[in-house]
Length: 238
Image (cartoon, rainbow, N blue to C red):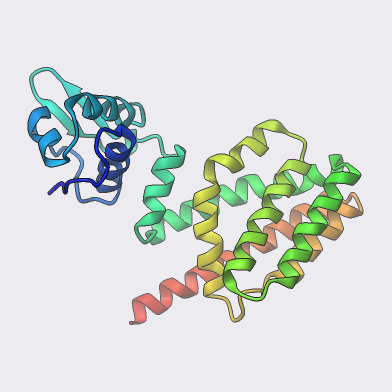
């Protein structure tokens, strides 16, 4: 069931342990958590720390407490799916194919529009920052360096859209995108196979060609989807 945690009296430790168990499916929707005094004892924390943790998990939509029935795990439809911790816990366990597909759909909605907006509104400084990220991708010697530079490229592209609502989305889904980019690169013929497509996006932004930038990004997301599906096919074949 629930294992004791190493650090006492820190409610964030309880949040992350219980959150991981819930999102990872070890604590299932509808399942009741132990009574407060028992759960605090199992996790080796004070009841005060446990109560604070429960407030956080409730705000994330993971649990609900009722006077007569106690605390239960909520159905995933009620979770705050864009919460950074919830996304992190989903990605910490191996992402399911359905979750990855939903990430693809989110990218298809956001990133082509962001690329087009960047082509219209980018400043010279933002273009230089985007180029710097592209050059870091080109210089990457391994998957980790590539993934870090890839994340930077997409972050700077959203910043260059000069739409604070778009750019704020990056900080929300950063963990999920990092997992996605690594999966895609790992299942490509080479981790840097997407470099030419990133160049096409950069050049369209440089030339202020919104529709070209949009189409280049659509192709990039599509190629990435194909890489992920190859992984799914290999898994099914195995």
